Amino acid sequence: MAFKLALAAGVTIGNGSDVGVFTHGTNYKDLEWMVRDRMTLAQALLAATAVDAKILGKQGHFGQLRPGLDADIIAVRVDPNRGIQALRNVPFVMMGGVIYKQP
Image 1: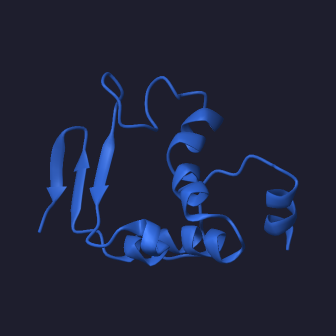
Image 2: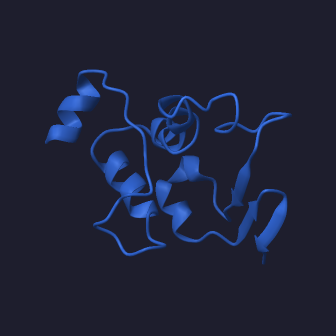
């Protein structure tokens, strides 16, 4: 209920790694809950990227795919705009220019 009220009031909402209620590696569930509680898909994805960077005052360092910014990149098999559940299966992960997982 508090999440819905904060969203309706225009509170800036980010998505963090301090979830705590989900097992490590299942943080995507937090985004699923955000969407379930009326956040749009785009808002949820931004909450985990550009909004987090802005909250941390690091928008000039990360949070977007732009030249000169640090970026960790994932790829999913299904367009997340078709459903946030696409984030449950992440076959590609690149961090700091190094590929850690690929199909």
